[in-house]
Length: 281
Image 1 (tube, rainbow, N blue to C red):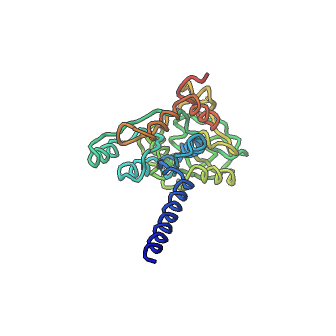
Image 2: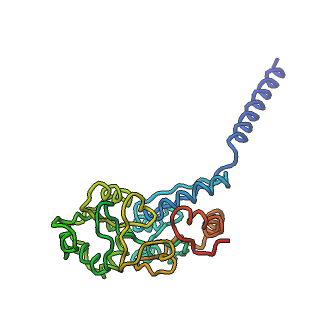
Image 3: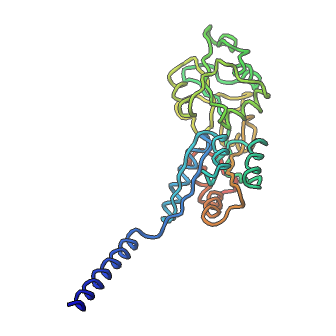
């Protein structure tokens, strides 16, 4: 009887082990996770890249979040992101923070080119601003559309938070370091700014060129914001977009970043409303 009992226990144990092995095979190999966080300007493109890459690489899961370049830089420093997306070069304080924690100043990759658009409601008759006019509007020195050859109505301003790379870039390169007027209503993301401008004919906002559907994008210095003018930088507020990592990328992170700069990745950039950084075949 004891011999039979041992055989039964052995058989049950064997069945259990086979069941566990079968479950493991059904679950498949463990997936590599890549966490991306940062620029809202790059958010649509990062999501398109992630979707396309995961379709080709079933063993990789990519999680993408926005929140602004500063948010991405902080997440990179704390280790809660593997890649920071950025619409500007990281600030010296952000690089110093990364260096203090990780002993590395990080690695940057140019992955696309785009431009900051000045958004207007489609019923607004104003077509063009000089860079000086944009500066004066967002620093509070021009308050009324009458000063811009339209009607006697106050200008309603929408903008991004200080965490935003676009906020920082516009302040440094157009406002020449001057602070934004307190009249700017800060919204959570560029999509929110576009929606607000769509609803208010007397409003003005700013954001990435890729978000410009449904609003008028003003000419700057009488130069239209077009792919050609962004590519050759004749449009005055053109800029590059970046990916940042702590260390020199390895493994799946390296393969993903390399892919974003490949023909396939850059074609997705073009199809998403951005400009590629390589010559497409």
